[in-house]
Image (cartoon, rainbow, N blue to C red; front, side, top):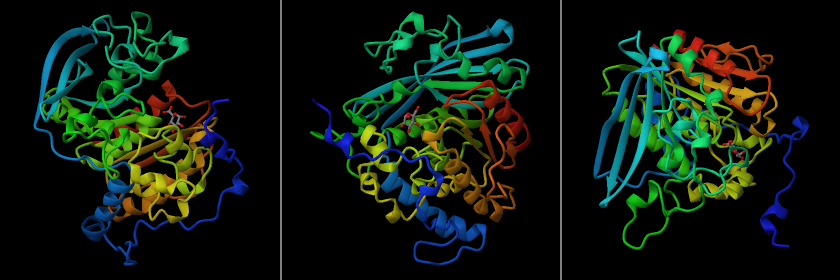
Length: 409
Ligand code: GCU
């Protein structure tokens, strides 16, 4: 039997609240050397940077260098998408370093009634053509994950996958509410496999280098970088106002890191992001640091591996990642049946990040009691736990739109 011994070494995932280890949660408002933080100036000048640096070097990994060149090309545009309701734009973004280039496509729908609309920016898993039935969106040529139910067996998307993920993107709801959508296939930025020979990473290699250094970026940081470069385009598009970065699951982890690294994002939404996203690592509930590094060795910096089954020694936890978004609006959402992502750990993380928002006079989550299922709690920091499973639903988008209208301005 060719089963990896690593699989045997993994204990069962814990889903029992009484078995959650007792642990002190690192205080966002006490520096690593023990000094208290009393106001937003001290937070910004002392504490925020040291937390940021820890996540940058020890969790997601550093971007090794600057690009040599960056360009975008609006290659398709129309004002009759969605039955004339929307303007569509398709933009190719090219990033060049060391004479190597990658190009990825941004698909944008904007409500025509709004000359300068706010947009949600988020990655999709299977190609821009999967979020819509719109025949003007080409099938991605990039790597996609195999998926039996979509008939993808050789990492190539086909015409049959057009629209297969449209239920996750409430595009008409966004348009009807004055919002647009900007989306990118994450596989065009960095294919999601344990192989650093392709995607964004290899642009930066020195001669002979085959993977990033220990404290350099894994895939999550590469995806976050891709979002940030998309922002370079979006902030110059005169039809676009605020950009709210959104992501589901692994791409929710990427959205949070993008929100932490790039302050131009006016709001951040984490949908079921779980371990390495919004959930507190020290709870070890559902997916853990050891498991995630074992199953997805390419997601985080090499330096994060040492915290597997060793969460005690982590001087940070994920509530401090959330705090890096402050004072900008932040929405953390869970799903009741998504225990793998630890809904309670996601909630507590939003709760514990809220004291940083308080330094700015912004209201976050005031009580450590989780709200009931399908009872959203919306302030500058917002949270809901939706009934159902790991997914993105119309219900989720309805909450995000309502919240964005009030808090992201
Ligand atoms: C796996 C993984 C999670 C991730 C999820 C997803 O379940 O363990 O960490 O969030 O995939 O991206 O759907």
